[in-house]
Amino acid sequence: MVNEILDAVPDDGLPILEIGPGRGVLTRDLAEMGRPVVAVDIDANLVTLLRRELADRRDLMVLNQDILDVDPAEVLAAVGAAPPYGLVGNLPYAITALLFRKFLSEEPHPPAWLLVMVQREVAQQVVATPGKRSLLSVSVQFYADPELLFYVDREAFDPPPRVRSAVILIKRRPQPAVDVPSEDRFFEVVRAGFRAPRKQLHNTLAMGLWLEPGAAKEWLESCEIDSSRRAATLTLEEWARLAWSRERSGAPEAPRHARLKGRLVEDRLDEDRIAEDEMAEEGVTE
Image (cartoon, rainbow, N blue to C red; front, side, top):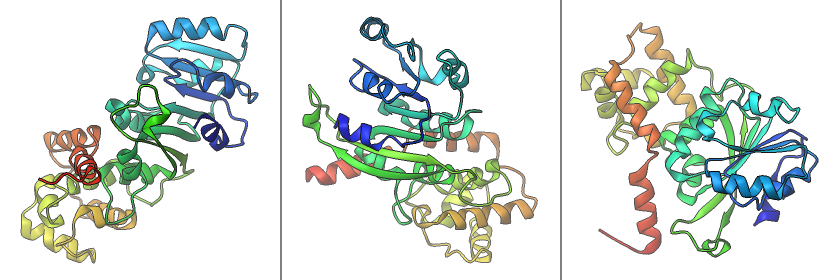
C-alpha cells in the first residue's frame, strides 16, 4: 500500500504538507523524493517520536498542531519552501469535510493536489457522477478533478479498522469547473437542493430558498430542468444555470438560518447515504 501511494504522488517536485503522519510510515519516503516535507500531527507523543527518528532530515519538519489551524505558507517557509504544494494524508473521517472545505475553498494558498486516504464510501461520493452525486461531490468537483485510485483492504492495517478505505487524487482546477455569478450564489442553490436529497427538486428548493412550491416548479422549468428530478441527478452545468437564473432575477440570498442548516449538511457529509451503502455491502436490510 505504501508503495502504491508513493507511486501516485504527482511528479512535479512540489513540497509536501503531510496530514497525520502517525509513526512516519510515509514521511521519510516522501522526504527521500528530494522534496521539502512538513508533517502535521495533533498527537504530541507521536510528534516527539517522529522528531527523534527523523532528526537527521534538514528538509523535513514535524509539527504538533491541528491541521485545521495550519497556515501552509508559514509552515512551508520553515523548511525553505513556498506554495504551490501537494497535500498527502490519511484524513480523519470526523473532519474530512472540514479539511476539503479548508483546502479547496477557504485556504488563501490551496494545494495543487491532494493525495489522501478516506473512508471508501466518502471516496465514492467525491468521484460520483450525476445520479449518485451528493453535496460533497458537487463541492469537490466544482473546485477540482478527483480520481479514485485504489481501495485499501482492512487487513493492510494493524489492528484492522472498522471502516474500509480508499485513496483518491484530487487535482485542483485553475478555475472552477463551471462559470457562476459567484461561489456564494452557486452554493446557496446547491445546498438548498441537497437539503432533502430524496425529495423532488422543486420541493427541496422551495424549502431551502423559501419559495412557494409552485414558484420553484416554474423556476426549474424555465431553466429546462424537470422539477420532479432529485438533486443527485443534476450536472454542474445545471446547478450553474440555476445560480445564474436566480442571480439575474435579483432574488435576495436565503435567510441566514437556512444557509446555516445547509452548512451543517456539508460538514457531516451524507451520512445517511454512507450508512445505506455500508448496509447494502454487508447484506443488511431494514
